[in-house]
Length: 143
Image (tube, rainbow, N blue to C red; front, side, top):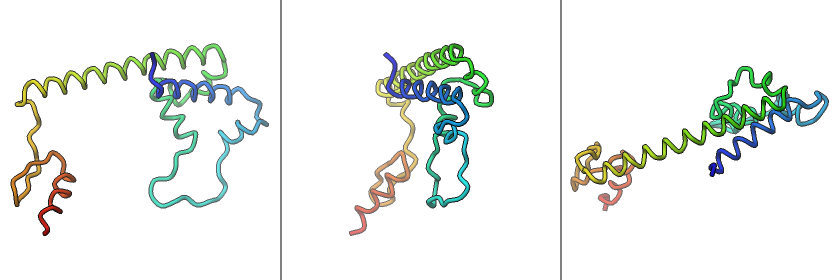
């Protein structure tokens, strides 16, 4: 059974193809292809637009971002392309999960495969894999 993430990506890509085939006067199409004339963004990373998340979805589904609109003009071709991309993405997700699990199980069986802790507390000698763990731990020695 496909993951919820893959199902959402598939629905998003199918909707984008539907919007692509719409008449130019329709509001969803104007919103997809429109640009903001003015406005401000919050400091930091700007919020993603539908276009931005669509681009990531198309990449995940192995659909060429440069010419997805041409493929979307034919309803049956687009649907087949999205379906094949979703199957490929799901197979990739499953194989990555399996390989991560196998690596974790191998580390559990053989402790020598564990990565050496890189961060050591100067006060008590406790080791941490991540620097943030050490930073949090050093607060306990302040008293």
